[in-house]
Length: 237
Image 1 (tube, rainbow, N blue to C red):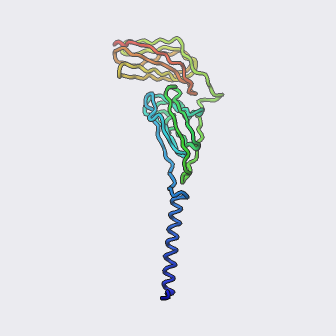
Image 2: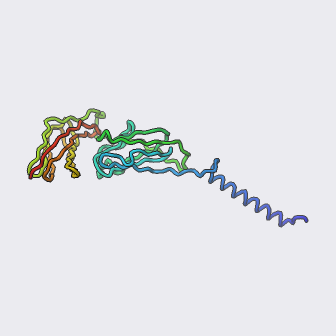
């Protein structure tokens, strides 16, 4: 039986609709039928003397953000210092440093204040993201005018004593730096931090009575860290 003009028009409309659906599906799926993956943001947190997590696996185009939950840290990624050393509330961590990775490979990062505090970012080749994220070029905040300083500060004439419920640290520092002392008595951990100029200083920290082990170091404005001094001190009231 012959097909009417109206029937032919209905068939044409149906075929066009089916073709349109196919075009939309192809645009969504891509050439291999997979939906394009959105870029991810992974967070790594500094906690006391370790990174959490200390190893992450990401795809090209993903971003890693480093945060600081406690302690005096910074992030050195390869040869790029992403921020200066600081405590969580310092400007060095606000906003937190981050990096978008555009090249596959394995990248090591470290806290310059604690050389044993290292981590790894492994970047695998990934698909192009729907909206490419620009790669941020790490900028080192200049601590002052002049050429970068690569020499670590030195400490001399160091004495640590305890009396009247306080620890007293006396030392001479070769340049402007932040002096850090970590006192440990079992599970009791206390920190002393003070920014000093070149010269001789006496620093104090209130502590409960007891015997404490301590580690002491200095970090200059460029992140160069001195050698660490270890010892014990007894605090009496």
